[in-house]
Image 1 (cartoon, rainbow, N blue to C red):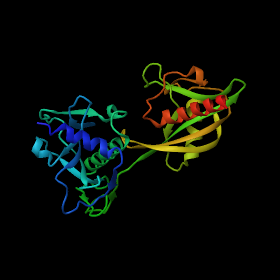
Image 2 (cartoon, rainbow, N blue to C red; image 1 turned 120 degrees about the horizontal axis):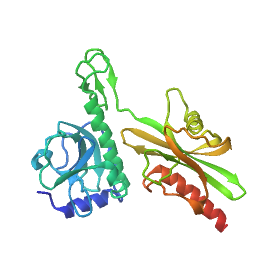
Image 3 (cartoon, one colour; image 1 turned 90 degrees about the vertical axis):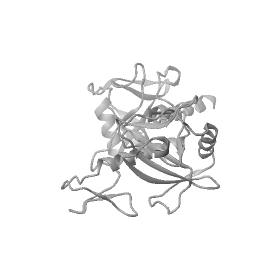
Image 4 (cartoon, rainbow, N blue to C red; image 1 turned 180 degrees about the vertical axis):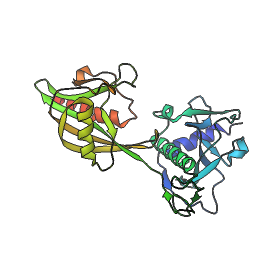
Length: 302
């Protein structure tokens, strides 16, 4: 049976409003009776079924509701103003039957539904749980690894290799140019996108590259254009599986659109009044596009 949904909704709303998450590694000797568990079954997050969508697991013990974690990791706590709510990540077996009242959903489905701080913590939990799962054995010598006290790390007792949670940095860049019709933004369609959707250029940073070098290379490779005046915009954790999206802007510096056809289906320059279907508002891609649209609206009103 699910606990009182009013209590869960209250915590869900309070934690996303004025309360903050404090990251910790070492589990305190005493923890709150009410704990926030981010348990994953494969790629899917487990929670309570509710009319408003998935509710987070705020429980005293997963076993008490019929869930048996294969592994668990302490994340830290929500500073709620009274008793802190300690948070854990973990995973259950992919073939385990979920008890009545519980379901598992793709974390992407909660973007725009859960508060950004809850989503951010769920993404952190997903990455830590999967890192712990994937580093039970040493990648150098194959020996079983051990958790390192006081660090988010696993160490091989045989050869000494330490493994830490990894993130994969990727740039995502809004390229604009000035024309007689006004400032245009470059948008492209990846073959994997839903029909009709366009976004901005993105790609992973390669070993030895700066962010600026990556931005210039990705734009050149994907659409054949040169850019300059590359500037930092913002960032977003993207746990699919472990990316850090680094938003940037740049000015068009030359060239004609030439598609990397194995990846890009189409790329065009757009004005605000002719925008295609855009990415969800929860993504940094949309924030970059919206910043362009707001700037153009301000220029028009001015």
